[in-house]
Image (cartoon, rainbow, N blue to C red; front, side, top):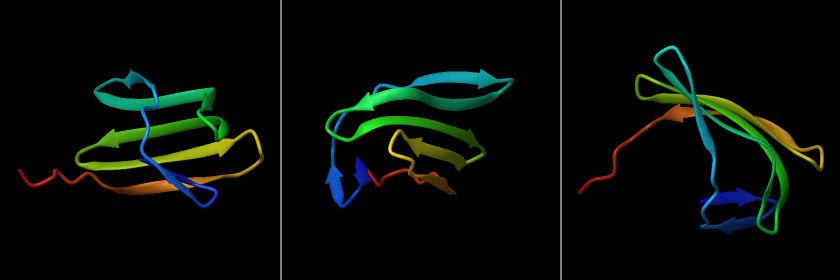
Length: 73
């Protein structure tokens, strides 16, 4: 699910996962996201939490962080 610029859309966004030792890092570099422009993202996942940054080709960007919560079955 992508929320950006007043839009809230569910869509697949293919991203690579690289590893820094035992820590996965989700990355996207200057890639087009359907109808929303180009984005760069780095998100680190570790011990049930995530933190990262994002930026768009339009000059927007920010930080994100939080807990990873499993959905109830």
